[in-house]
Length: 585
Image (cartoon, rainbow, N blue to C red; front, side):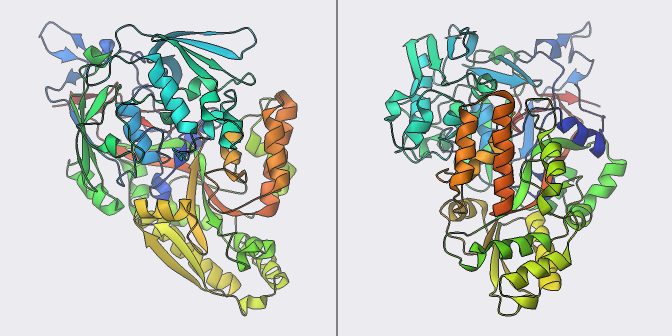
């Protein structure tokens, strides 16, 4: 659909999100009310912009719906933080995924919410659903002119699961049920035994351990993108250096200035280059919402998802350039369960959970249509019976005891049970977040709630995004840390699996044999039986409370009317391969 001049209400989008596929995978660095995006679909065919370039008698090129195509095809948007990496196998953050999605292309390309051919022109699926054979396009090339071959995919996927790579997303190959992936991640099998093989330069064969409905869509996920063995390095430095950042997507890296900007230009060797309109994409790295908003109003950037919360109400009422997009994911806090003995007491974790007024936060702090979270898996996932996983679980378990508004009496009782009546003797906690106005506002609100409702003190600490990722990934925070997680595929498992004991994404040190067993059983069962294990896993998780769910995301953003056919995929990544700048004068 064409998005310009069309505003969809927050409620309509929230309802729509329950029917959509899951949004972006990975860690989120942006403001609470402006987290990574969901889905906006273009009107043109997913693999071509031919309809968007319709010549008319006056020799002016126009889009299929009549807008004049601008002579200058340069697009500027705010990426936010400087990505820690844009190496497909090393990246685990949303900002890096936006870049990778435009520089690289997987076997498939999602556009308009549909799976369409990418590097693969077609694929065959065996009758038992366990073998996928992909046939690559003829003449596909890397940005340096070398051919893209099936072996590049085999190498990239095996690189991702190789323990030496230390990919935070190695586990997703197990989520995809690729043969031997889980055993490789668990250190039981050599990475070369992964069930992927290049039969020849044009044919890639993948073997699964069990039929997996969402596997095909996952092959377009950033971690599954191909890379060249002769180019990559262990630390991903190659991907930010224009001379070595060889890519196979519609755009390639022209320049990178640390913490300032990244410039992509059209890749002339991309198989569909003739139908790519944009010549240049400048990705700004503005971390403060107020600064990004000023830049948008000054026409210095054309798309931002960093919007001051104080401006959202007025924008919602008056601006045709303002959108609230659905976004399936959860904003939450995690505990240091390995070294902080106080937080190892579940009654302390209950008290901290119960004392938070989530409705107050969503209505008066973030103000972007977010939904107060009473479980980890939020709206947007269906079970085997076609019912909303979130609704069924929360109804059956009375929201798992998590109040939308603070339950002060229950919070104080839990803290007293832990040995700290009225907060007496309770040590000062550190609450860490990445530098951002929105995260700061949420942190300050929670700090005040805990002080007023429990009588405890909390120190707020912030770090720049790249540093914060390292701190959280290495579990070197000492109290609580902000987190955000977006689903990578259309199944509740994409949310729950981060809490498996040995998951690289398990940043809190949570470990439960009972939880792990339910996730394991969900991998070897199907249908209702499988979903029952996932329901049980969430029940265990919410009983143990190794986290504090705050709200379910939405994605407010501002987009200039001149930006036509911008798109956010169902996995929450910006894709500009179909975008065209139009002239409204």
